[in-house]
Length: 590
Image (tube, rainbow, N blue to C red):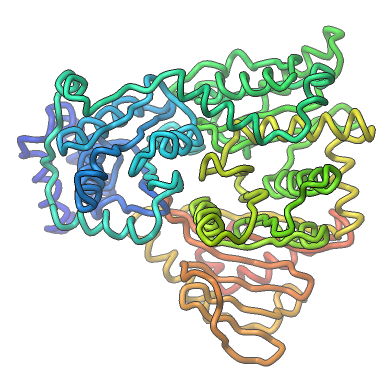
């Protein structure tokens, strides 16, 4: 039986004047499905790492037009607290190809306009990095990107950016959460679109922003002359997976000389249903099926073999890469491998060209591979670990600019996110596609090496690390409690070794403390307080555990050293078996 609180929430929506007839019908059809109603109304969808993401549908725990209005009103209240100048600076808004993305973006603009806040709305869908750039270019006070990134088609989301173009910092996120709680109403004023346009409170952004953005991306390339002269020699296949990348990724590659670019036509157009893939995620093997099919067709037609397959997720902030092996098959690179390859290429090129800054810095998420730390420091450059979420990389860029210390070279996350340059403050797959293509061309044309050859060279010099992840979805009320219990059990785990490897360090990020085997004592941990736990081994490998900030998931990151891939694989399996033992009632598949 549903609790009185859940029934009250449900009845409020059924009887509200602000709730449209279609939404009420959707809810009435669920009256006999108590489990579904409970999941839709037992809580409000949470504002997590920079925004919200969830299943589409009616209810307080779903993404819908009413949640968009309520969240935007809280953002408007936050901006209004900064005064009339902040309201006049406005908010840049973009959206991807998902269900209701365009409607949610327009609704965001009209709620802002109703509060006297100018809205800059893209005329059509654009990538997330373009939105980040637009915030900076327009000197807006904030930005909103309507996207659920690489999630299934049933999801959508709402990411908030602040004035530097980075995702919302924690202090501003707390203000927005507080504003939502203070208002505690779903009835929100919405401006008329025509009036908002006439009053100058709504401005539609067009191609001029694309041109400015593309110019900044061009500036990040390292070998313009080489790509212009030899870019046609690299055969590329690219798929935008029905998302926002089609125009800008294609444009930046062709303008940099990569004229032998082949687009997967079946996935080139936006599609809310993502008909050709189970999930539009470049990390999934299924996402590459049509790209590999096109590569085989090109080769069988006598047009040469395809060197690289590239894929971007729906909002084009994540890039997937597949490299052709000597046997003709394609090997998918992990985000960690691409991040290491880009760091190696960028630093080596800067050294060769004589323009490596003395205070150059690479920034990565702390769950990204330990190999990057060895490679970057081995090349004489500083590397810094930050919490999960690209906003933390953006924050470090801002701190470097404000302090005058540090020169940003590259930021990356293991989840296929990369950024070079400071024109944007979020990961950029448009730029990453061009950089990976340039690196592949450089190594092939000048050193007769593939990216896989370069990766092996890195392993030979710096050591082999295998990075893998286990993600467990635990939905609903029970799932939330289970995730909390898993974290409690693992925080109490003080085993001296895991899978035969001595634990040299235990990191309690939630309370900013660290235990080190060397002195068997707790010490302060110089790292932001986040809901995460870590176990570190003597060779720099680690296990880190983190509940997701935007999904009902808990993630386990394993970075394990080995003599080679086979050795590391065997170690990982042994470590997983041992590590999950205390929580085996919750984690059954790994």
